[in-house]
Amino acid sequence: MHRFEAMQLLMQQVGDEPVVANLGPTTDELWNVVDRPRNFYTYGSMGLCSSVALGMALSTPDKIVSFDGDGSLLMNLGAIATIGREMPRNLVVVVWDNEEWGQTGHQASHTAKGTDLEQVARSCSIPKTATADNEEDLVTVFRQALSEEGPWFIVAKIEETDEEATFAPNEPEMYLHRFRQTYL
Image (cartoon, rainbow, N blue to C red):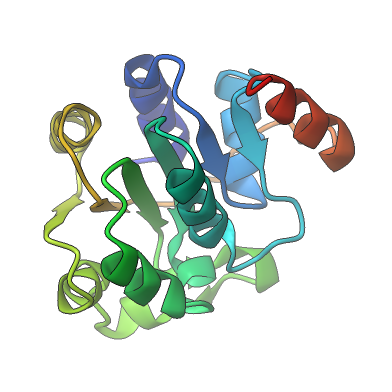
């Protein structure tokens, strides 16, 4: 499964819910799929995507979707433990697991050597978890996560492609202002 095609399918399900996107290819691909005011791009915040989404989930009744990456999440495993402690009913974390740190040179991440992020989430008291390695299963569990109380933690096993998405314009202040305006 490839992240870009999978993200296209998931964004068809999201509706108007806020989406927090991990830096790099996740932000670029989300911007190419659909740039909208309720997308929050985490430029330069490696390891903090799900933490930002958790903060949002704790401060709004909206369902919050986090599109994180395995490498970024591995840099901040405390985010998973904090999600398990706080148990936000309105948070859905999708982890794009390509088994590498794509932003730093494509080194193999821990998930390439046996770390199972779904099991980590379960051990941190997150009761609703899944791993999907194809688009059909991913869409099915994502729909379920959007319709039920969470928190949800979904690992999407992906493969990288040689194709690169057009870079999203690097204008974090503008995107932050635009995102905040959706809550006024």
